[in-house]
Image (tube, rainbow, N blue to C red; front, side, top):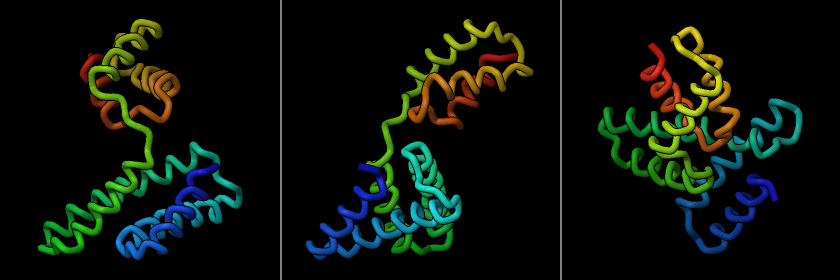
Length: 147
């Protein structure tokens, strides 16, 4: 079962239960997944669905900051609910210690010794870590290790 069909089933269940906030958040995610499928003109595989979810998570987190800055805590709370829902759908990310170990291993394997080889290290880290790697954190850790 794809993430999209699971979300559609969850939305139906929430609708029957009368949970309006959950229904709205689920519909938003379903809509984004469907829009991406239409845009690419093909059915999304799990990797594509996860990338859409990550993009939506980032967008929602930025919205929370903007709403708080604008004094709209009511809208920020709604976005926080959507963020929590999306985070539940995503696989758990590697913690910093686990990611550091992976980066150290990749640097040793590739023999990278300077910041010019960061691309080689990052591509290997992303390939080995898969969907569990937070690219932003990985980039920061690699920059710290390569002079």
